[in-house]
Amino acid sequence: MVDYQTFLQIIHPLGLPTISPAAFERFTVYAQMLCEKNKVMNLTAIRDEDEVFVRHFADSLAVYAARKEIPGRLIDVGCGAGFPGLPLKILFDDLRGDGETKLTLLDATRKKIDFLAGVSKALSLKNVTPIAGRAEDLAALPAHRERYDWAVSRAVADLRVLAEISLPFVRVGGQFVPHKSDRSDEEIDAARGGIAKLGGRLVDQYVYTIAPDAPSSRVLTIAKHAATPKEFPRAYARIKARPLS
Image (cartoon, rainbow, N blue to C red; front, top):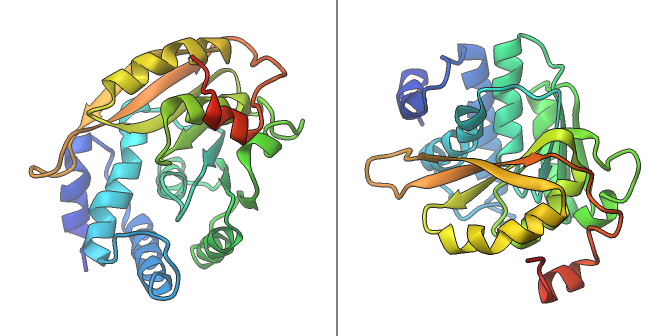
């Protein structure tokens, strides 16, 4: 199991502030619960606790390395096993010294959301709302549409698809901050027109490497400068069949 000093070394290349031992303890419990649940449920292909710290926790925290900001309200779209939203919440609570950052964890799979509710309770995290549902449905509701400072996502989907289901959650002046691989230049270029139709604009790309033998990754910052037209997001079948461009 990764110890406290080792984790500080893992996240050091990201230039993050030093996390507290209490925050590290939360990460440790999260890793243990994830690996235990993974024995009976396919939450992640990574089953080694040490790898969870590197490939899930540190990688998730790259969002803060890219932005150096703490949002008041964020949503993780297609959160899966909680990445990057839950590690960011642990970090933000540690940096702020309170639990006031509001996190919504959204995934279509009820079992994943139930697991994340249990993790949040075990870690005594406040202001975490796990929701089982589809992004294109939730984004149409007044309680969620254009209500978030940030939307984040590590979901494995084309950026044109991710942008359409995520940007409607972001308030004007907020940001959509997705992870992408270092080999996604063509995908990003293909998404620029659709992003503009949704009221967004790509303003920054943060390229990073967690481990010396790992490929580079990137975190994009897509600023929301205008309201998303009411016709978006479309039904998911239409989004997949005819991505915005």
